[in-house]
Image 1 (cartoon, helix red, strand yellow):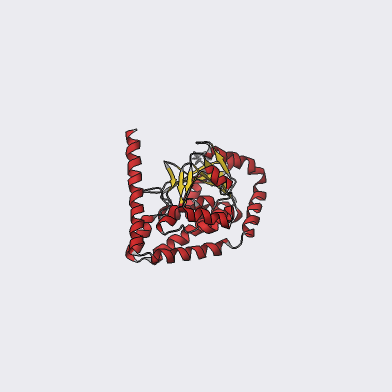
Image 2 (cartoon, one colour):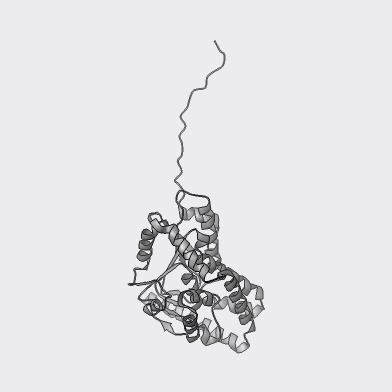
Length: 309
């Protein structure tokens, strides 16, 4: 008889951890994401990026950096061949305004300290986001955006760089920068691909305010929908495009190639923009400061009105 004792089999309790969600997995890859929130809708394989810049609705450096980190994280996540990949990436925002454009306060701070490098970093990161929105994260996803309210200048371009952009009928669009001797970084290469060179020049040099129907007629928008219907339109698009996802991506790529070297155009535009900002004289800088102050007053007034209501 063997002296070896046979250990009794004990059934140990096991803890089953809930599977990590797609949005949480992407956050884990991306790291800290100030001024944006994520939400994933598995029915459409749709990842929402909720833009929440602070202290006002402009494209701050922090917001742009967070969007860029999400883009990189989605590419890494999809490359890992998960069972539930992100196939559609969409942008939206909340509040009375979609975006007031670039961060004038940041520009002014860079000018005050002579920080050319800070402006170059801002332009480089902004154009990186534009490029990846246009090429669908290098052919992995279809990018979409929905504009629910007022969108100004450089705040339009990241949304319009997406493969598909829809606007609610309460929205409005304008590139007012020309009125204070300024221009948005990526507007020319973005708009020219949608509206053509002549129409893009008119839009940028007029500073006019356009209704969604006017932007649709010019080729800048893909659809106009009733107030509150933008997000559902994006969901329906994703459902419809699910069976033709790869073909659509290839079509977007074919059209992008037809328009030439986007990266080169964005690099040139960023260099021109930095040179222009650094060349502003004291009077022109003061005008930018007045615009920034006007933004602050407008937002304060709307906040008081909302509190009163």
